[in-house]
Length: 72
Figure 1 (cartoon, rainbow, N blue to C red):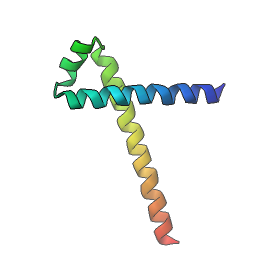
Figure 2: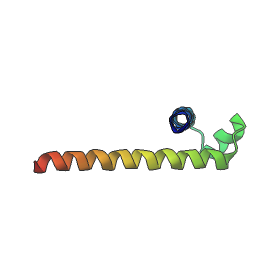
Figure 3: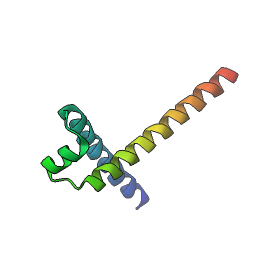
Figure 4: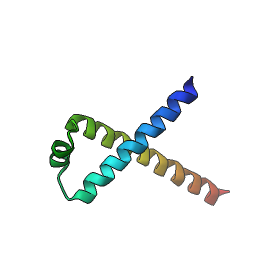
């Protein structure tokens, strides 16, 4: 069951990453883009925050891995 939830979360993250990428490419502000697409801006900002947090975690993990390999 946990694996199914992880897969669903990954798919949701992919969907929202695409939406956020499209918003940035559109040249519109996030609010204007959300209004145009009929997306609640609070939902957009929530997923934007989630993705930013995930990317920061991945960057930190990569930096730790690099630092560990340099020490070894």
